[in-house]
Amino acid sequence: MDKRKAWPKFITKNSLMAYGLILPSLLVFAVFMFYPLLYTIYLSFFDWNMIKPVKTFVGWGNYIALLQDPLTYKVMTNTLAYIVILLMLNCAAPYALAFILSFVIKRRQGFYKSAFFLPSVISLVVGSILYLWILNPISGPVAIIAKALGISVPIWSKTQGLVIVVLSIITTWKVFGYNFIVIYGGVAGVPSEVIEAARIDNVPLHRIFFDIVLPMSSATGVYIFIMTIVQGLQYVFTPIKVITQGGPDNASSNAIYNVYQEAFTLYHTGYASAFAVVTMALFVVLLIAEFKYVEKGVYYEN
Image 1 (cartoon, rainbow, N blue to C red):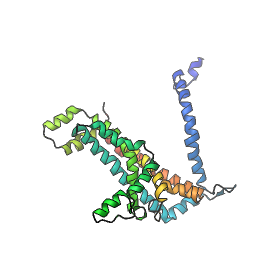
Image 2 (image 1 turned 45 degrees about the horizontal axis):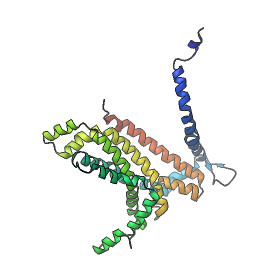
Image 3 (image 1 turned 90 degrees about the vertical axis):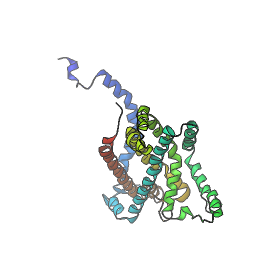
């Protein structure tokens, strides 16, 4: 019997070489992603504080306690509000700005692109401290201008509701530049002859944006939509840690910061692991829904 026939058809010399080349990356993912993920799921079924030598198995106890805790719903509401504000500031605003610079303003585009992208290379810790000074209700520039106009500035870090808005603005300062450059590339890739034909027919600019530019750059838009959520939840930890520490009364805490708080401040490791698993499951469901319903309407050239 020919030995070559004993191998499955999908195992060839080229496929073995491909598997060999991808193996180092898979090992890195296994060590730094898959193992921590599986270990987090494992810890979610135990009562442990990272100090005791013995872990106490509690089954679904951590998940039941999580669902019965009112703080869970407050934190998730904060997270949802933060994401909605972030999407408006980092998806809708960069899209409109990229359209204006591509088809309305033709001069000094390099300056505008550099100015908008610059904050994305600056440390978010520096940005958080900078905004803490700018928005200082007593001696900050905003307070001085408001005082001259006869307006009082609230202590935003101690005000329910307002604190989420300001944290979203701080994160936007970091994320906006990258999103703008990527969206600008997608918008600039829309065929100019289509835009010119619409202008000859006297199509209003807002119809050109919604009916031509937005659909034809939707692939870039979906990418930015996902990255805004991922980067936003990643970056917001820094201003919360530097400025508010989750206050006032957990009004600025979100799912990511609450997991850190439970695990490394209160040492509720099992509970924090359960919270992390639930958060991950929710975002996986949202991602699946996005691919199922949003991805169908995406335009891919050719």
